[in-house]
Length: 616
Image (cartoon, rainbow, N blue to C red; front, side):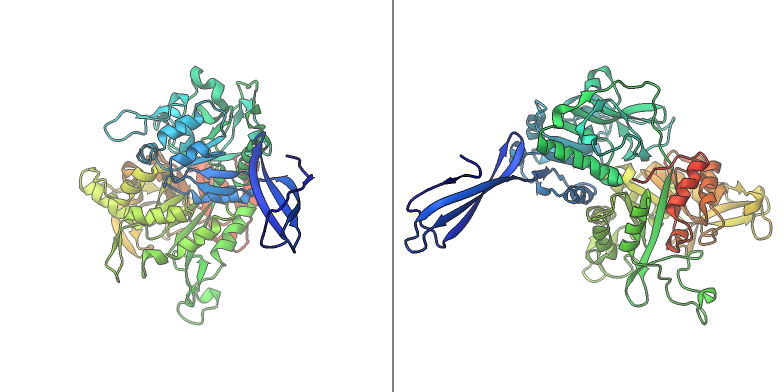
């Protein structure tokens, strides 16, 4: 075969005087398309000559989507780098794959059960056996490579993995640290690998996990990077030969993550993937989990039926007389379109984006959820974590009578592009039932069913409390309510220095006789992985977060807390991170109205000694 050459053939008939054929092939791990152009005489339809040329093409990525969690973002990250995807739907495809990406999202037990049920375990072991075939595992796609995990079915101490890497996956110690490990953290490099060729060493990546792979002598040769959290150093990525895997989520790590995927796939194409070399690791070098800046977008239909981002003033989203309403309540505040605003915040450096669908499920069926389209569109160009809340509960279609349980509703959100779901009113109901039963879990609440399938880290609970002021602690009649002392600057309208925080449901419209701390502790016991903590009294006031509330809840639980309601300037973020142990702070209105920029918040945090992610 001669490239860019000519040769002659006789008497080969075709329907026209030119015909093109395309042949794809692999040569020295590079992928080519060869184009053949045939020339022949029109009258006697005799082939006279043939010319051809070859060009290198991008390889096709085989995606192992086993049906759990948000895989849409991984798809979008691959296609954003210019690669095509072929879904693995049959075990036989694994043997013939050029490169496999396994984006494991959810729980280890669910992942391994599905791999076994679909017959993928043995083909994967064959594919990975000698380490020469390209593989990228993400999160559970890395954990399943180990011998076993403590994230096992009830009644089992451990669950067997693929057994490619020596070692066992274990859970972070909840007595020593907040669990899950959620947020942006760094990496200590143990190997110089081409997969990081486009990533600076100081760039943080996004983690969300409760279980980790500890470093032991038997797996040290596999370590690509390690990361520190809560006094533990764990394996954050591995590489041996062509096998690469990471505990962090590149598809949620912004441009840094996209460049990591780019480096991996380009290394597969040019044959350099297995060229990683060991590095000398400085023992004193540590990484740090940074504080997160989260942007919230309250999404609802306005009076014309359009989806808009709005903002409440103590949960009232309609314009008032101060904003030009002639009398009574005006129209829904319109602060922009959801997807375009979210993209703006991603570009400006938001660490996470939270969509709150404040009209979901009042009418219509699950197929018509307006947030599905918003999430699908947003996830095409936004590569940081997306949380969605609103209507995460069991639901009966009023027309068909069909009932959707909370897990099915959450699954639709995850498949549309959500990384985490936020449960509001249903959390209060579940907490009340949990306490009334004496702390008995039914396994049927929305928190339990979703966290069991997708993992605790996928479930955020949103608490909407309001203050009940007291002259003194003893004035609280219910001993279950946690009474807090207020700072003088945050005292009540009559100077009250004590209060308890009464939880509400239905967007703050109805109150329940249960306090925020009690709900938070019950939700943690039921399997929630994170708390979004609002305060109706502070909402829209721009006077700062409610420190007493944030401290009371964050001190009472071992899961991460996101402070919400009240931010009006950069100092408010510094204040809440300094005064409480919350891991993230959320704001909305001040960003929507462009009164404060995200980069100015992060700059001020760093100037005050509070770690934040550098926007890449």
